[in-house]
Length: 258
Image (cartoon, rainbow, N blue to C red; front, side):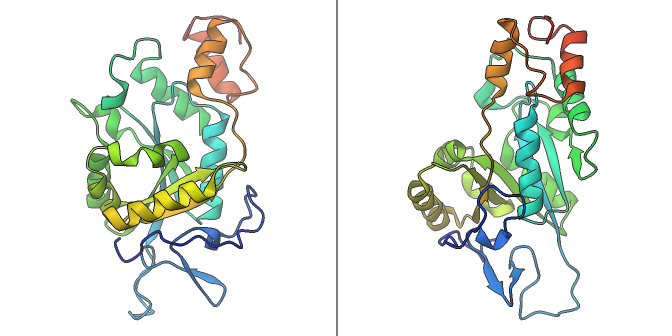
């Protein structure tokens, strides 16, 4: 993990936001012969060429209350740009920063909405591990467990720029950086210089491996969706239809027609 530090961004990113963006535009990578050679995702270049190739899995964490089209677009971009084998959707069970949540869906409802949303995507996988854990759930514990269960896999945790800037406040960030790479979703108009400085800072402080993900503009959030439903505004164009139907059928967030 610590063989790579995020200290450099390829300026030749090309088609920003396009799902065909070459993943070599991410930071901390070396392009050799036009192909990606990632020390954290492949065996050492100096090692045996016959060594098994490691798997890559992205992680989309969150309360998903509710899951929406923005989550799916972000996961699809990461899947393509970083050549991931699959993306795990990991609904949080009882995160310390979301204590006292009383205006949302139940755990069971959140799980079902994720299940419905990703049903048509064979490389999107629902992981229920955090939902069944007792007490507070921390990202570092989840990553340790995943690495123990799948020692032949490299994990890429997908976060937003805001989360990157607040990463020092996460519980044991040094352990998180030991057990996964970070993929940071950025949009056009974002202050890349500021993000790059933070990436370099985390690389120096924690040995973090941080990469940029060019993503489309996602003008939707779960908080806004809950507010829209309560205001009797339609959200059917912002969530998968199966999720919209489930919200209405089960009278979640106010039980009005959406």
